[in-house]
Image 1 (cartoon, rainbow, N blue to C red):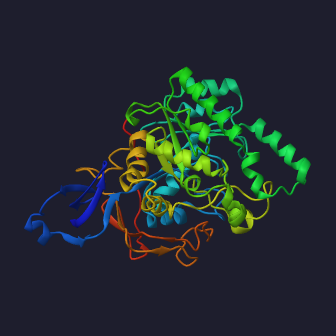
Image 2: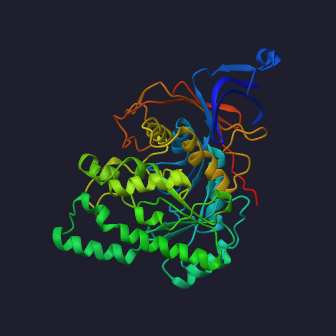
Image 3: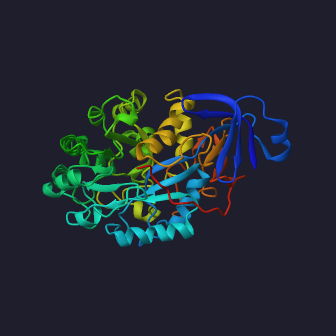
Length: 444
């Protein structure tokens, strides 16, 4: 048994001093007052005085690049970085090589993760214009959801056939997660800026090419489909003020249409392209300070529900060039918690809200079985944070396979001290231990 003693427990909207007893894989007891003497003498005691104890993060959107793109990242390396960042569970996207658009490809990913993942895992099955029969085979108790690209993507994963979209929303009884950017608007904008600059469009025009209008039109279309067919819809990586208006304020458990914000859209703005250039090129693009503030207010009001990363590593040489050359995406999963706790220190969000949006909300939204909360009988996926210990991101402590971070050189005012995975110490003293995650299950 392990006793995490005298921590500041941040859970379900409250912060209090207490202790958590772990037995095997699960939380056996939560003590809000004095711990029985026999527990102190029989358990391995971890003194957590001055530390924050939170549930392990659940990241509902990552790209770990395996199979087929493992020069950028892989399940082993990226899940290891996740554990170092307090992310104990992840849901991985289907745009790999081969693309995860068949049940066979999906099962192969689960097999890889079973052997190589440091963190708990699930995988999306990707939709195409012609794989409806495969989507209908998915077991929603064991698979996190369906991913639909309603915007440009690699290969054949752009679902732009209206009949197919309608069928997916009408006939697939599980959560649909959607990348929303209207391709026709993007192509029109590319043509305009190519007429001005040729093929070398400066990176500062990226948010004007993949514009706010492109995002809103696509997101509005997805919401209309979900409303029409009564579907569960989760729109990923929202990036604009206007999109926030598409969502309602109501308890998450009652929502069928939900929204995600990523840490980079809450941290950076279009003014940062001058400093970081293509290193902060994502799709959807980082937009204005006004958009960033509206996204944060959407989270605080309850219109938006989840904070995730869209972790998508590329090699540094793949990130070079302008709007049409540099790869879109970047590595984030190791530092997402520290980013959000930094915003909390700046009084832009509370630490309790950070835990809600990164731990509780994804567990509730996806109906993850017994994770995302500090509760008796739940899996002991936990994170100890030192809120008074500075941490500087350097090349030496970056664990991503790609070897870089947009936060390199940034000093955060909190440090991840320990991560517990299924009752085991998976990370401590800057070192990831050789633990293995488990496949997530979902309560349907």
